[in-house]
Image 1 (tube, rainbow, N blue to C red):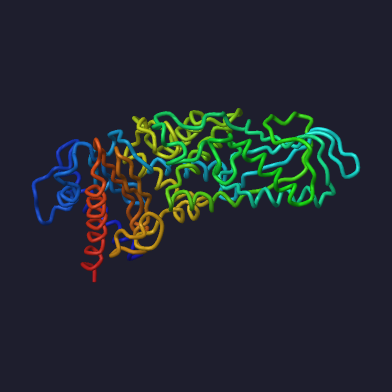
Image 2 (spheres, helix red, strand yellow):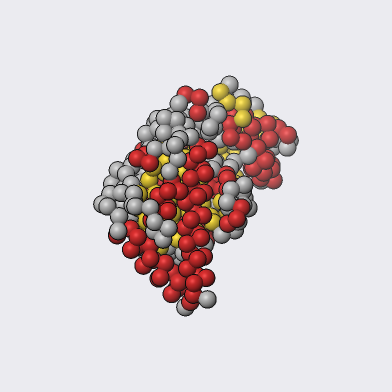
Amino acid sequence: MIAEMLRTRLTLLLALCVLLLPTGSTAAPASGGDLAARLTKTLRSPYLSLGRTAAIAMDASTGVVLYAHNATRPIVPASNEKLPVAWTALTLLGPSYRFRTEVLGAGVRTGTTWRGDLYLEGAGDPTLTAADLGRLARSIRVAGITRITGRIRGDESAYDGRRAAPGWKRYFVGIESPPLSALIVDRAKGWPALSPPLLAARTLREALLARGVKVAGRPGLGIAPGTAVPIAAHHSAQLATIVQEMNRTSDNFVAEMLLKELGTLEGGIGTTAGGARVVLDEMRAAGIPVAGVRLADGSGLSSLDRVTASALAGVIRAGMHDARISKAFVASFAVAGRNGTLRTRLPALAGIVRGKTGTTDLACSLSGVIGENVVFSVLQNGDPVSFWSARAAQDRFVTALSSSLTGLRKSQN
């Protein structure tokens, strides 16, 4: 009850500060008691453009906007792009969702011999490893198959064959992210000498040979025919675990694979564009503002991405208040002073602030929550952006918000 009263008073105080500002701006006459002016001051830096900065603070419970600066202006988001992707994936697929990688047989079994080809059919598992394929090989051996007359073929047809996303620089593939594919093992270690699905087929073939299963043909590519029968399957960790790793460490590859998986919900193969449509549709359905939002990829690497601070705050609130996904969604954020990309930041607020960082040469961002009371988002752009200055400004902003809440609580005692 007391916490609720404090939150209400903080809401009213900050809302009043916002109302006192000129329309479309947070620049107010400096005043020691003017929280809005102090928040704007935290964002100022000689190395940053306030005009290319967007920020918002919102009451997590009511959705009341406590502070806003260019909050509806489309800004390059960097890895904050991962937030709507994570939220949509958890919402539509569910925290317990698992990717399924399957071995299918085209042919006929005669005793211990499989006469025909085996297809390793990928379904977008970004965490698939050689050890996982070893378990598949063991399952095949345990099933009594000791000889395969045909080939092991990699099937990546669940997604399109594009290895990159729109707006990516050429060197991003292989540096910022492995090549994209519905069938990829150990993040395509060995690419570009071989394509991801061919690497996967070769890895499974080697695993079979190591377990005493003879394979006559060389590894190859192909699409499993409709008449193929299931022989073995591997399931990934739950989506909640995958999303946590993605957000805490800002894993670009996982975000791209999740976006393509969302694209399959349109009823066809997984594509980046299809996944982006699904995310935007889900945001609209939840009442999250999408004006000016453009999702060119899932990771935030693309220079074509545009997101608003208002949209990001809306996504965070939606995730926090959805009982089905709230635990998994909030747990995916890095914790200040504790882990992930916030491990060395905001030590005075360790364990109190959770968030998602983002940094490219064009953008630096931080969005998240302070305790359970305030949702915030800060996005800064530049050509290039001074990311050290940007991070310092973000930390000042979050600290000012947190101290205002602490000060209000103390005044009640």
